[in-house]
Picture 1 (cartoon, rainbow, N blue to C red):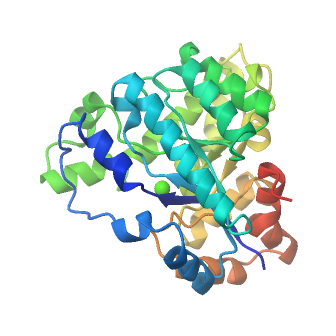
Picture 2 (spheres, protein in one colour; picture 1 turned 90 degrees about the horizontal axis):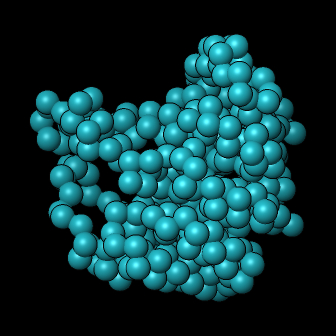
Picture 3 (cartoon, rainbow, N blue to C red; picture 1 turned 60 degrees about the vertical axis):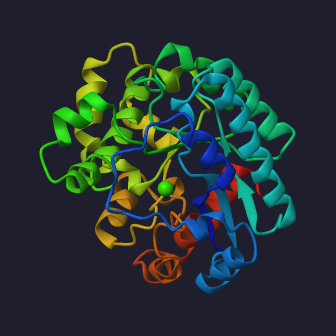
Length: 322
Ligand code: CA
C-alpha cells in the first residue's frame, strides 16, 4: 500500500538562527526537538521513510516563528524556506512534495508568496502556524491568503502554534514551568486553540466566501470531531448568516490527519463523523514514531478501499500528485 504523509517537518538551521535574533528565548519545555532528523533533507530521511514504508512525505518547515518577527525579515525568510523546500522536492520528486511557509503578518505578501510557491516552485499548498498577532484566519485582514489558496486550488494545513500569552497565563499557568508550557502547547492547549481556529473560520463565513477552499487539520481534527454534532446542531440554528447546515463545512471543506496519533478510538470516531473521504495520513515526522504508521493502517478495522483512500488516493487527488 502506497503511503503519503502530509505533516512531515523540516527545519533549516540558518532560518532558526535568523528568527532567533528577533525573539526572546522562549520559556523552555523539558522537550528537546529532534534537530538532526529535522535538518536532514536527504539520505537519512529517505532511509527512515523506507524503513517505515512511507512513499511520499509532504514537507513543511516547523513553526519558525516568522509571524512574530519584523515583517520585512518574515517575507525574506519565508521565501528562503520555500526555495529550500522546492529544491529538496526537486532532488527527489517521487519521494517529496511540499507545503509553503507564508509571511502571514503581511497578508498581501503572503498571498503573493503562496502564488509563487505554487506556480513557480511547484509546492502543493501552505501550512499556517496558528495565530498571527492574536488573530485567527477568520479576521478579514487575512482574506488575500484565503483568496489565493482558493484561486490556486491548493489546501491550507492549519498547524498548532502556542496560544496567545493572555490565554496561556489564564488557562495553563500555575504549575511547574515545564508542565504549564506543555499543557499550553502539545499536551493540550495548542490543539484546543487550533480547533477553535477552524471553528472561527466556519462561524466567520470563510467557507461560504471560498466554497472550494480546503482546510487540513492534524491530530484527528484538533478535538473537533468529538463535539462536532453539538457544534453543528447549535450553530445551524443560531448562526443565521451561514449559507449551509454547519456539518456541511466539515464534510465538504475539511480534511483531518492523525499526526502520528495512532490509536483507534479517535480514528474510528473520525471515520464515523467525517468518513474515509475526509481522512489523509500523517506521521508528524520526526516528532512521532513513523514505525507505527503502516501497521496501524494495515490493521485498522476498515475496508481495503477506505485504507487506500486514507493512505494515498485522497492526498493524490487533493494535492494533484498524479
Ligand atoms: Ca507537527
